[in-house]
Amino acid sequence: MSYTTQTQTSVQEAGESAGNEFLAFTLGREEYGIDILRVQEIRGYEPVTRIANAPDFIKGVVNLRGTIVPVVDMRIKFNLGTPTYDQFTVVIILSIAGRVVGMVVDSVSDVMTLTPEQIKPAPEIGTTFDTDYLIGLGTLGERMLILVDIDKLMSSAEMGLIEKMAA
Image (cartoon, rainbow, N blue to C red):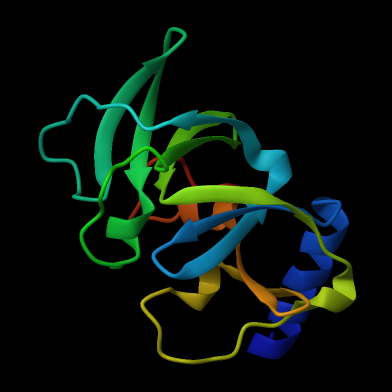
């Protein structure tokens, strides 16, 4: 399957499965979006318990109402400079493949509804972001969201958080 066909399929699947609603969040100066159906809750950042020998991007774990939740810092994961933790820093709690995972981002803005026409395939360019994890680019007026396939990203081999999902 060619890249274009694969991307178009991903865009169509994303539009159909997500009901076209994406939670918008920022990392550095860029705005990203993930399927709102994967979001369990949004919490303020709180210190985590570090785990020995975990990759740098895994900040540690938190106890969320009796569930031990691994917390991933997306700034570190995407190589976007040294993260700072302030009153705007949030943890998006995700439910993916039956597992609960926390994702640290700079801030959360809103939920955007996008039509399939507003979701464009991601261009093939050399970025720090692997295009395998991109659904495409969502456009709403002058605003552009980098749409992330959070299921693929969190279940990727280098994350090691969630067993590979059946394709």
